[in-house]
Length: 77
Image (cartoon, rainbow, N blue to C red; front, top):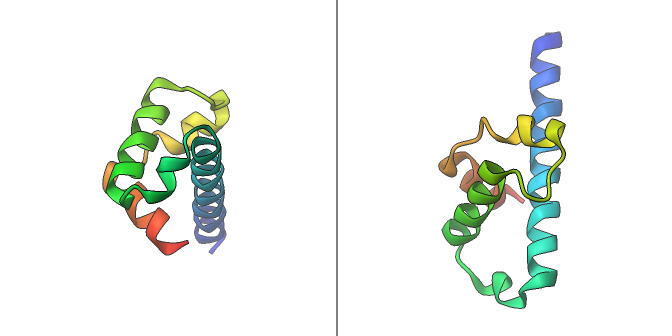
């Protein structure tokens, strides 16, 4: 039970971090708003891999996500 709650917290934190990254990217390039989810997910995946804009802790939390995971998390928001 505790493990499930911890997983839920990780999932919520991952979603929050992804949304913040998307928001930051949109401020830098307004065209991001018009990109398909798959394109945004690819940009996020690359950002996570390179570690840009992320603390070590946040990067560790997000680096387990696959491209498909990111797409799904973005589509649920």
